[in-house]
Image (cartoon, rainbow, N blue to C red; front, side, top):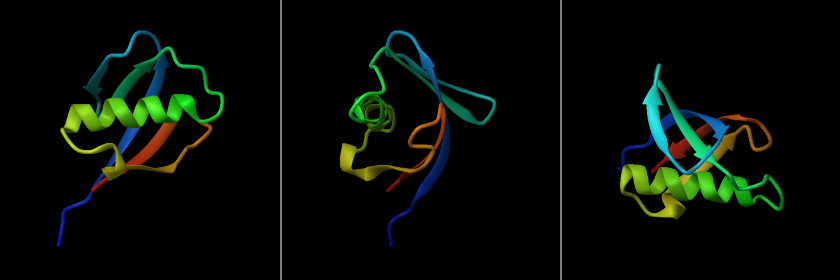
Length: 73
């Protein structure tokens, strides 16, 4: 059985950088939240950060919020 990790992500405007702070992952993006493009950018950044494929990162809550919960498979 594979291990799953649930993380909290806080999205902020800015150049694509990502770091951990207070048990939360801070993800910066300049992509506008239209047509789900910002969420796709966040998934891409988180997948690179954890060295997993993009299809292994799922948003499980907060689709339209700056605070999201992600599951990493």
